[in-house]
Image (cartoon, rainbow, N blue to C red):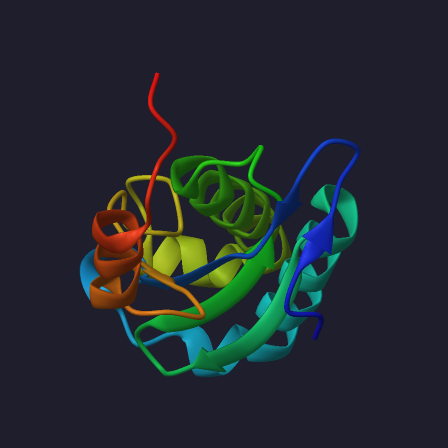
Amino acid sequence: MEEYRSHAHSVSSCKYHFVWYPKYRHPVLDMVEDDVRELFGETTDHFGHEILALEIADDHVHLFVQTDPKYSPADIARQFKSYSGKHLLERYPEIQKSFFWGGGFWKVGYYVGTTGTVSEEVVERYIEETEHAPK
């Protein structure tokens, strides 16, 4: 894992922690865990994300990902959830019939939190204490 990513005109460190659930919070992920890992890997390959940590429980997923600043957290969640959800339902029609009769694999919402190399207090102190040239 590289701490920073270099781009044409910027350097970034964008890391997000996501948590989301299958629809109706059905405990089905143990049945499809290998597929979820594979599909998330394909998503990272396609968009250039890097999975820093991934934990798949029976009824929810924790994903810690580093990415480029051109992607919003909403974009990232959509990329992972839409691609994997579509393919999971195609691969497991029996799960769709038993648990997801209304369509869609993942619940619409999600949790996202950001991480960084410094705390909020450090950033606030830096901004407040740094002398800025007059305009």
